[in-house]
Length: 92
Image 1 (cartoon, rainbow, N blue to C red):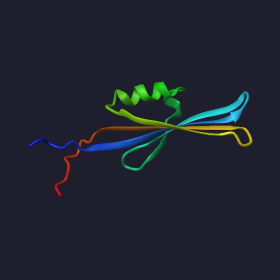
Image 2 (image 1 turned 120 degrees about the vertical axis):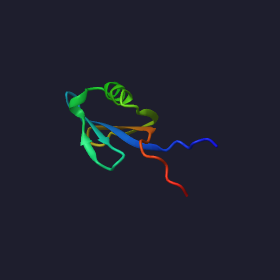
Image 3 (image 1 turned 45 degrees about the vertical axis):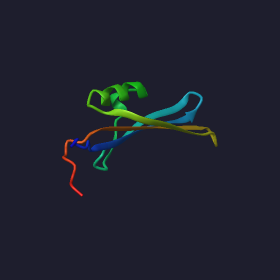
Image 4 (image 1 turned 180 degrees about the vertical axis):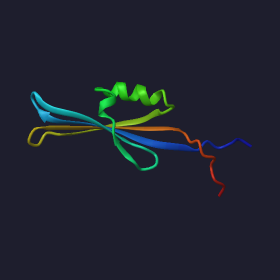
């Protein structure tokens, strides 16, 4: 019988807000335990953040983009990630 892999999931959100030279980029990490942390200081590009969490065992599952151009510009990119859970799967 094959062992079932249990996964844990996280979300990295990149938000770009502003217009012209007045813009702000931020990165927020939503951890599997439900906590939320501003990780903007760890890098200024999504690639830098994805490489950082990749070294921690996270794998990119999907990416999505929302663009809203009402009164300036807001872009939101969501990067959904997973990795095998350290906890053993519970029985049914």
